[in-house]
Image (cartoon, rainbow, N blue to C red; front, side, top):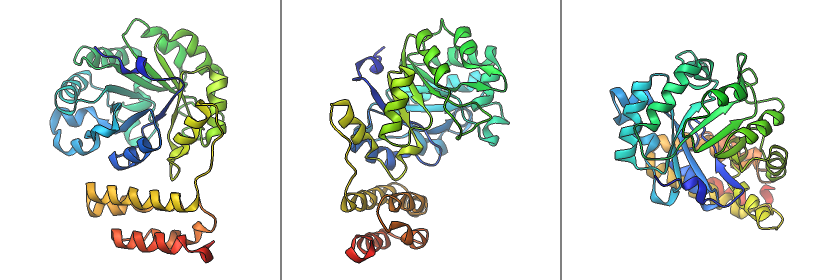
Length: 320
């Protein structure tokens, strides 16, 4: 088995998974700005067991996106086994990740995501089922605590399993996506986990990402919301990794990137692509002076021509 995690330069800067966000179009944009590893959106293991076709759009990727990791959620070990075999054979990514951290109610109520971390024996069975049904490196993404079930105890329970990488969202299930990052737990996990460890949660800019890296002693950082409308956070972090200083992109680069992102999204998904792109355009517009006033137009866009017109308007000197 080729463990690509060992081949990555340190520190590693990964695009962490986000449902409805980290699709192929956005992944390609982030890769272009230097993201080291790309994760898919959350894909249901159960969907692969019953009807894989609708889920394929979530996990298919372009060769330019490598190394690419498919992230699965669910709670049934048999479904995970089926999904692992299918993904390994048909999708051929660089790795498979298991989600133990999603706090969304529709996932949690079905026993998936963070809920899976409250059942250690079942969680172990799930991990084993994936490892036994793929030759790809298997990784997991967790939270620090889920309803009293803590990460360090969880890691002790599964320490003998061949897990190649671990991404820790440094917040509890109750915190969801806000509040302080539990630096101490991630730092203690670093001392116990032998594979590649990525810290996650609250890395909204290069400074906070570097601070998270330094305080936790992790091998890298998983960036999710910090990349929304801001994919060049990866090039900025790459600059710091090489001893340079992160530079904010000029207005024209922001708008050019937004236009290219829209082109990719529409090319891959048609009308659904432009609808999904509206939120991304609002995030891009927040990055430029005076850009917020164009958000009302952004949420009404219907075509790539509309995007081009909005970009041209936002680029005009008087718009700032």
